[in-house]
Length: 172
Length: 107
Image (cartoon, rainbow over all chains, first blue to last red; front, side, top):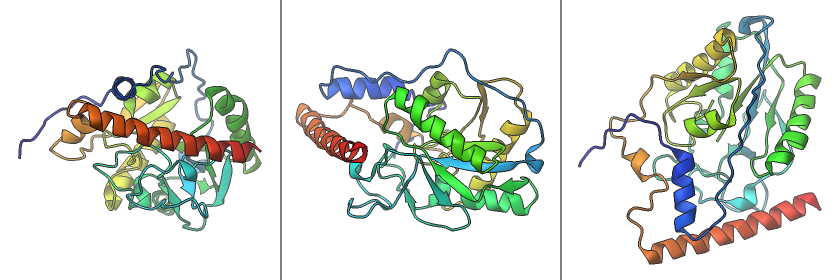
């Protein structure tokens, strides 16, 4: 078997533009771009902070078909409002509703896309101060305007309600 | 935390931990607790140490010595016209389902 050795990251935007143009769609996706990016230096260290985990993974949706490991792309499993989950439990969350690499990974270990257990271990080891009692689900299928004006506003309100100091978003 | 470096950096975020893994593994390798621990620790480092927006920390981990996965993702190089048409039809179905679900969610 020939090995291909490429150290450069995949250029996903170009790859996906070419792919959908080849499929005959003539309206290439406009990726979000922000000239100005907000930034705040930490007021207290991570070991003194409460962390909130934000995910684009989806809770199991009844009647929406296969959402488990290796499931085909499943648009029926998408969600359209920010949701919260109990971060003290280990409920199923899937990524069948997004375009992950189905040839080289199967999403059969939630820890590879939703690091809640790793966060709990980090807390137990003293690397983080506290964990929010809830985690937060962020929709992936909105317009950029809806993401900014509705979803991000909803998410921020929930994080503030839970007195979260630092949010970690894991994008899928 | 993410695996699509160009997309996240194009968007712009305060701090970014990039794992050069197939999409779907932004928190580390599956069934590899040490990989997942290291990836999270890098995220905590990014929180603590970044001093400006658009800071990217790259995980030193490698998915596999064979990087064929990078070439194959969404590759059109080996697809025939018939396969392209089939994929178009599949994607049209996915979009229709997505629209139906979105319309229901929005009432």
